[in-house]
Length: 262
Image (spheres, rainbow, N blue to C red):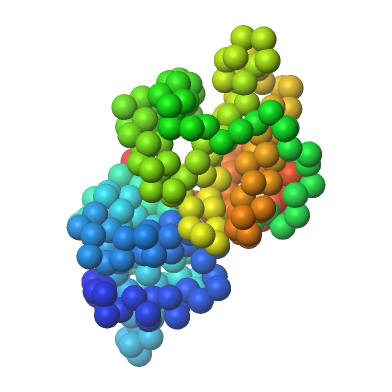
């Protein structure tokens, strides 16, 4: 049985997640930020026949995140529910996504990892800094040119998101510039923040500046600032260079993460 949640259910949801929020970060952060009265954010609870909670399903715009504390979700029921929602993407810990995967053959799967920074082991570049609002236009142009990280969203969407996050103190953009040309040679950001945690994303270096360690130095600088504010730091990583970079900085893997997209 899948039931849509209301404000009265928020305490129950947090009790179910408890300290396991590293496995459902965006669900957790969005619930704190928006509550359940925002038309663009919803949560459903799946119950077993014994009326025990076995999964949470969140929807933000048209993206779905699934969380099951014990991976005891009822996969076929959730898959049927999701087909009615027709999301553009579905994500969650791989063990949970595995339970619905066979029922959603129209989706392609990408496997990565989610990790937490345990100890900062790499020296930050002292010249990397948190960009002010008037530099976000330039940053959005650079990020939008990256084939994997920014191009799917486009400049307009990225610029709007960066400005909104900056204004709401919900994210920040760290950059490193070339000392001679002043070009942006590396970018790393938080795409979601709370007073106690931040989620890293958007780490990229333009092609002509790659293989010089700039990503690692800039990411370390961002992490150092977040740590100085007492935040727990999490990140998602998919490709081998990104995995190696995160481990080298001091991240440890929480578990495998899966994304399903059409």
